[in-house]
Length: 279
Image 1 (cartoon, one colour):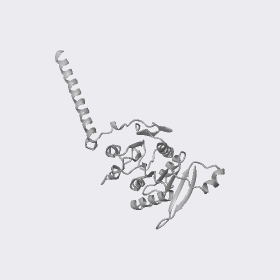
Image 2 (cartoon, rainbow, N blue to C red):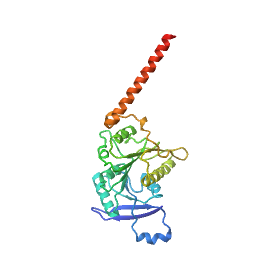
Image 3 (cartoon, rainbow, N blue to C red):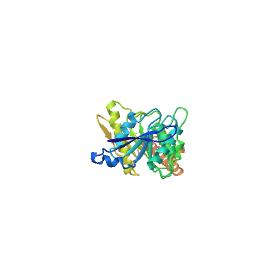
Image 4 (cartoon, rainbow, N blue to C red):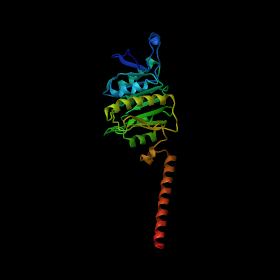
């Protein structure tokens, strides 16, 4: 993997960035210095993270095996991070795909412009004990595709609550579930954390290049090695839905399905009662 550190002039201080891309042959090194490489993703870390945090380093090293990514260092202030996104986008002349981890994911959503077509939201902090941060997700325009990368042990993004929000969102969403991972994408054993983190980056890059609208959920796990389910049709039928969060037509279909199931159960119960009486 090739790394290129650079700064973007800003106030009150410059924004530190790293461009990660495929390894560049020595013969092309001089040419690269004179040529700006447009990234496929602008990404940033969480509130307490840095550019060298495991969650960022693992993801970007995997992503860069397929596509180029620019990561920038921000502070813990959400408004400031959104402003930094805007400055990095201006500097790179690129806004097509934005993303981040945790607070950085929130900033990516808020920084999106009419030119933004994809969002990659890793460990999105959907809820705390006091609030649910879903409104900016619901407000995402229909033309934007969203990829969530969430650990199934993430205490800030429970799967059932995320599904409820996905049902309300106007845009198309994909969900990559990392089995055994917490909010920081940490896993046991520790060797799994690095390997799984890199694989999430690879999958995210491949998702940018090509994605199937009919297959929007995938599961990534560890059993002595990385196990990837590939993208499948949504498994969300196993997650309880709140009917009030569904569009009217889906509410009607769900209601009919439940009534049909209830009637079928009642008919079977009645048949068993009649058979017992005959005996």
